[in-house]
Length: 153
Image 1 (cartoon, rainbow, N blue to C red):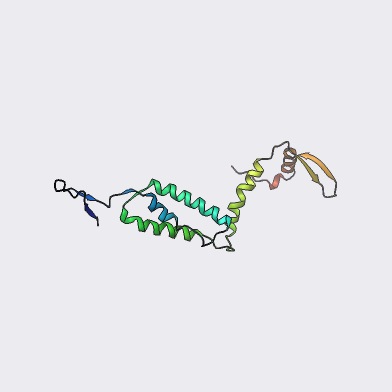
Image 2 (cartoon, rainbow, N blue to C red):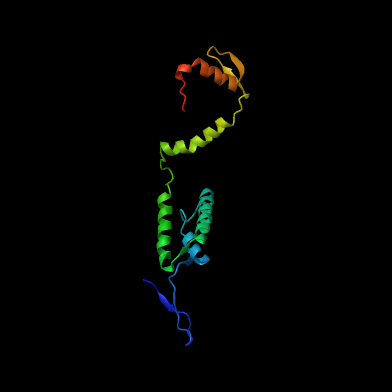
């Protein structure tokens, strides 16, 4: 239901303005929403940093949208629900999949950062050591274990 308001108190101008037309959020309205994004009354430095990042991202996004004023409370409720449903309690297990997602990019970037002429010290089964380049060593492993190598197209 639209809220209607007189545009002017003068007798000549009797136009009616719909005050529930979509508009940009005002800075006070944005701050009213953002201030609810917090973990606790007192935050650790890590939580403070995380909260700061969430506040800044939310401010930027809210500044871009247009919304009917009557829908602002609903928007705030939805944002707060989404924020609090995404928070994981300290000590809660995040699962194997999450651990893999966290570790995989680091592992992959480490593997991609090794040059083929990088030198390695290899210790053999008998305890002797030898100096090899990683490229030649991997090539030799592939040749020796050809039946175990799977090529992915």
